Length: 325
Image (cartoon, rainbow, N blue to C red; front, side):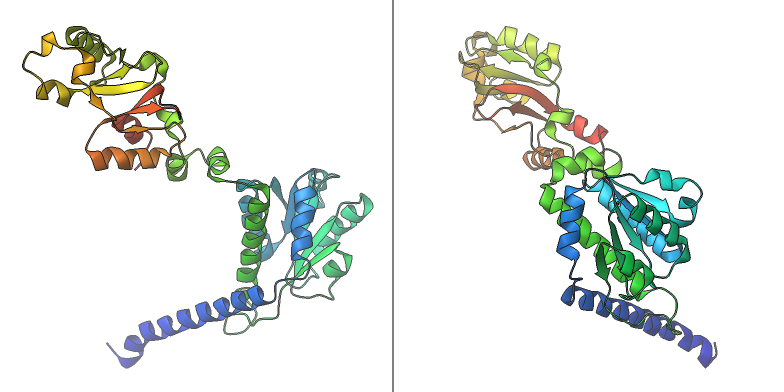
């Protein structure tokens, strides 16, 4: 292997570090010099009765699609309109009540001109995102998100690298600020992400548990011969022993049967039951329930309300089938 071949990997690593350091410096500068209209933009998007329409072309368009997707998935209705397609009918996707976020690093993207004119005609506010404060876009915008000047990370200083990284970062900052202002929490996130690993991790016990009809209920005076029939019929390997007021008194498990095998038929459920058993509430994350099952080395949890009344049963297989891990 010649010297040039040996030096190629080292040079590649050096180039990669320089790119990342340049882009990181751009984000640091952006955080220190957040656009003056940022807070006003958040307020405008919060009060919009329609959606946040994002538009751009080229690399700005790709960034815009991601920003729009992030907004939509975190509680701010949003849609991406391709700037070129807008001039051929897609302007109809923009309506009164919307807010338009138009992205162009130079601020002189010709394809955005029809969108700008359409918004001016119908009184639709425009937020401009650009690094050129004196551009056509920024002069026409209602609010301006001006990126600070930072060098691109490419060796010729022309390929959109640092600028698009800052656009993405600012888009994430908008989405998160809007999330917090709306009080968008994990339960809302679950509504928008029902599929895949995220959806499984955000499931609640109430999404997976077997309801009241599946509960193997007995009272403390139930003979163990009858209690075992209930356990067998319901198929969870436990019986929930409930007091007169409906609250959980204790649980009879397969382990309890083995521990009290002598004279078992002459005893009652209340005499055999484990008092203060491990339980869980319906609003607990399924992932937390699975962790508890594994920690206690048990396969079933009774689900109770805040007053201790049984509401359902969760089996470890219910978690595993749903992809909770």
